[in-house]
Length: 634
Image (tube, rainbow, N blue to C red; front, top):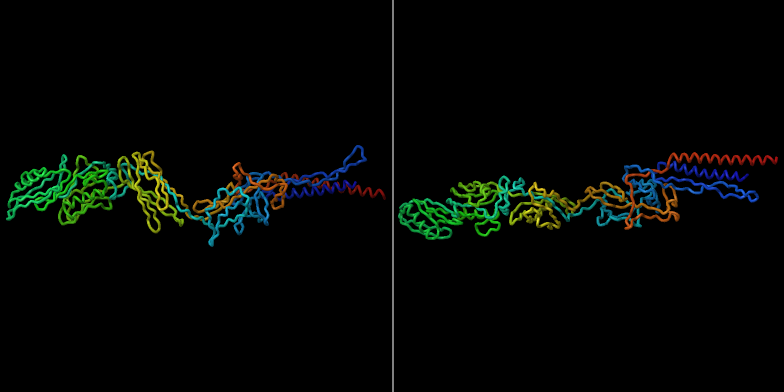
């Protein structure tokens, strides 16, 4: 009879524990990462009645045998906290440190405390593989870029991590620059600038931006003084001779023609017919071609006409056939504007000594300046090999030059294209870089562009110039790479017409990084704790490991959603692949909710409550039976 009494009491105790467990489940319905506990009951060893036939067992009540954990994953919900994390698989745990001891939890709700450490609502520190790449300074923290953070896991060293607000990411000076572009090589362009002395005529454009297309062997006649014309390979000039006025002095004729000295002495008062005829005879006897006709003296030479007069009968004259040559061979050949200007200056000086200056102005115009008080004469004529675009662009430079004025050609233009970008210096500052390409020459099926690189530092502009050579198809031959100011420049450039399908799109890339300031933190799906900086750089400060156990049911629940490893659960470990690389996935800015099923929990609570009531009824019934037995003795 007393056995039933104690059976009821054991039931009350068992079901009271069950009520406590289901009540705890319900109480944690909103606890992130909470795992539901399920009570498991067992019977107490029975008593066998040895004198009974057949043999019978009498149960001795029940007890709470164990509490199983439901490790199924809860619902995943979004969070606006960048430090909230959920574990993607149902068997993983986060490691935390509390009072110097390591525990494990599924609760991924973390915030930063006053010192920047990531902690949960119980004050436990999140354990991570720490990069230890922050250096504390008087004004905050600086990132140590020398620490490699690519493979922080797996590791056996885990510690709390502090994420300060004031963090500076040091700059990285530029070491490499790559430029990709196409240099527009159309025959008509708008990207022009005035030519400079070193630009070859083979690469020049006229005032309207049209390629003049000057090629080897094209020439023109240019001169100063008496007009000299060109016909069938001869340079010819006609001089008007005047009668000598009788003054008691003989007529002295003294001049040189192409270096040959001619001297004559004629009687005072000689007529123009006599003078011109005697000069013609003398010239013909010295290998020149000369004729006299009624006082007009016509002289012809080849290649150059240089008459330097020492009297007043014949005016000084200098004219020559000037020829464009890819590689100048003699004094009458020119290649670039400097050559051409020098040739004109020599012609002018041979004729007018030092009263004529020939130059190239800032607008790319040929300027012939008369500094005397007399009207002078310059002229240019086409030959059978002339480039008419060139002749046309020279314009009125061949004409009378009035006192203290200048004749000017039209603008000669160069194909000039500018590109730019920036590099980072050792102080982390952006330094502008400009790269100008100017078409310099077309020679032997190659095109040469002059490249001028300028790094515009606050102190000075650092400049270097390099010729870039392209083949006849517009592809760069050399150089494809140059070193300048401790920076390696690589070039992927071409020289095509703008409409060519091979034209390269423009890009300027450099590997320098300016100084950055921390903007915010975020956690990625691999568990990496990343700092986002103002210079668009990302730096990893640590990585959150996901721990696993051979027997998660063997973990000891110490409350506050924390578990302690036991000999039954075995040691925590990390998943790795065959290469030893860490495997684990987190869900950033998300939380795992409790996996308690409210409907099931309430149902189990009611069932357990009814069982508790039934056990209580067993106790009261046993009590009544004992009371009846006591009353029988009376």
